[in-house]
Image 1 (cartoon, one colour):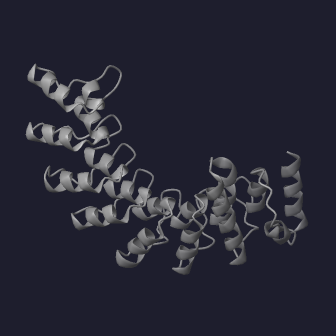
Image 2 (spheres, one colour):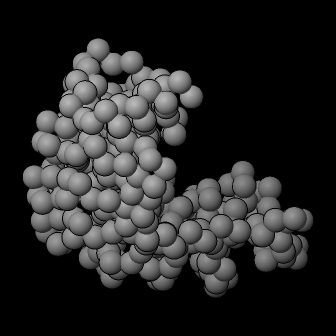
Image 3 (cartoon, helix red, strand yellow):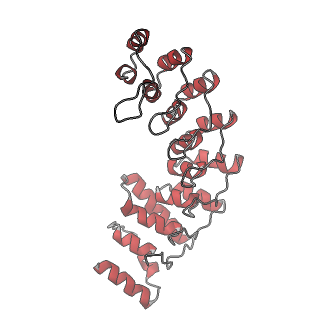
Amino acid sequence: MMACEQANLDLVKYLIIHGANINEKMKNENETALSLTYQKIEEELVNYFFNLKRWTIISHRYGTSALMYACKRENMNMVQYLIEKCKVKLNLQDQYGKNEIMIACQKGNLPIVKYLIDHGGNLWMKDKNGVNSLMYACKSGSLPLIHYLVMEKGSPINEKNYQKESSLEFACSYGKNRIVEYLIEKGANLNNINKQGCTPLMKACYSLRNRPMDWNERDGVLSSIKYLINLGARIDIEDKNHMTALLYFYRSRIYYNDTLLMRKYLKLTVKKLAILQNSINY
């Protein structure tokens, strides 16, 4: 297993010739020599196991196949090799329900996504949370990929996952302001409300505190917030926790020079301003 992990082909050959069991699992793990080989995605190793006719174990402990690893590493040559020569199966799902196309979409790799679809990849599958390929693509920020999925493949913009969230919420949460603008131009629902009562604007404000992000991503989220407000996104909606977009914004501890969000909020009722004051005191 260590030989596979180090991609040492000569040592792997020596061990197998002398009776090493490639299907033996590591203690307290579900890793085998083959699954470790998948993670390395070294062409010589892959080819060696393929020629041994032992390309049968598909996944390691997370249900991730060799093809999934190739997509994750954006290795187009290996993707082509696995599909065309090794004849591996497409449309497998890992333990989270993600298939190969979802992984490639999350990476924002348009050529691999196109190749997978052209060779039988299922664009319409969803993971265990009801998240589709377009939603994963929104995390990547790749506008050409989003355009391809929406305009050429007909991916529905307002389709929702099991939390009643659409692709717009994913783009807002990950600071992909160009994607936010594109989706709204194509008809995304500006005031969609998810199971928790949150709108895309609230998700953007909430993400500032909820998830670690670099400066570029943070600036993208802030740009999306401004853009949504300028388009008329409702700022008076309360979720099931009686929180609004501004309350989430304040709790993020982000102090932004542009106080557009604060000025808009001052037009609300005295009751909502009281809720705001209680939140700040808390």
